[in-house]
Image (cartoon, rainbow, N blue to C red; front, side):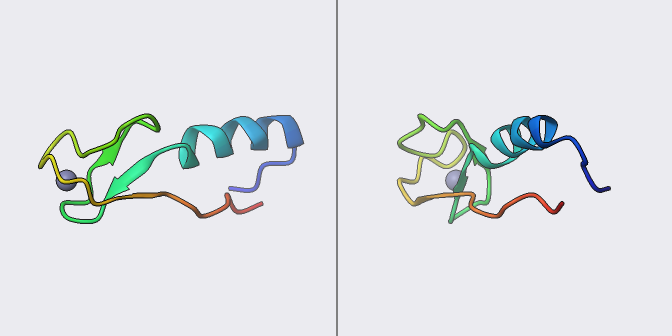
Length: 53
Ligand SMILES: [Zn+2]
């Protein structure tokens, strides 16, 4: 679904992308997380994919 409002798009991007993903189990973690809350792996990556306009 395309988002026309640039402000809403910005909010949506923050909500969707400000998250860390565990490379081991794929769990979503807080942006402040240093390790996975599920499997306690330190192998986290930033979710980096922009929202489709
Ligand atoms: Zn994990």
